[in-house]
Length: 221
Image (cartoon, rainbow, N blue to C red; front, top):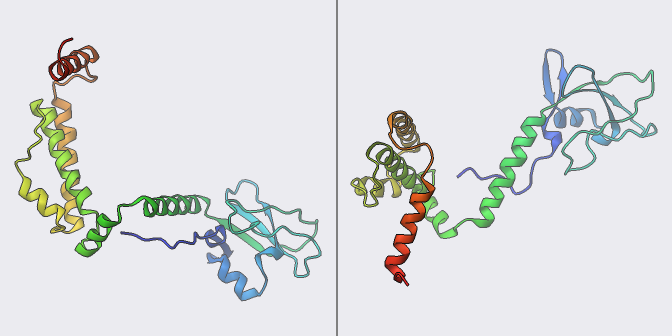
C-alpha cells in the first residue's frame, strides 16, 4: 500500500552540502553551480563520520573520481587531492538512510514480483489502506495466543467469526486496528508471565502423539 518507484534512488540523493548553519541537497547544489558530480573530489575528514572535504576541478585535469562511481554505487568515491587545492566545501552522506531506502526498495519490488495479484486487487478495491486478509489473521492469531497461554487449548473455530470477517472486509480504519492489535500484544505478554506452559515442548510426548496419529490413520502394522 506504499508503492515505490521502480527506479531506485542513487546515493547522490542522500548527500547534503554544509551551507552556513544548515545544509543543501547535493543535487540542487550541483545544479546551481553547473558542474557534474564527476568534477568533484572527496577526501575523508578525520573524526567526522560521514563528512567529506570536497574539491572541484572545473577542467577535469586533476582526475578526480567524482562523488560516486555510478548510479549503482553504495558508497562515495575518494580522490587524491593535490596539496594546496582550495577547499570547495563539506559534504555529509546519509549512509544509513540510503541503506534503509535500498532495503525497502528491494523488499517492495520482491513483493510485487511474488504477490497474489487477485488478493492485491481486492485490497485496492476495498480502499482500506492495508492488507485486510492479513489483518484478520493478526487478530485471530493474537486471540489464539492468549487462549493457548491461559487455557492450554487450541480453538480452531473462532467465537468472534463475524468480527474477523468484518476486519477482512476492510470495515475498520487502519489506525484503530493497529491500536487494538498493540493492546492484544500487551495482553499476550501479560498472560505469558503467568502461564503454566513449559518454556520448551516435550519432544518425547510430541513423538508419542505423532506415532499415535499415524497408527490410527494407517494401522498398527
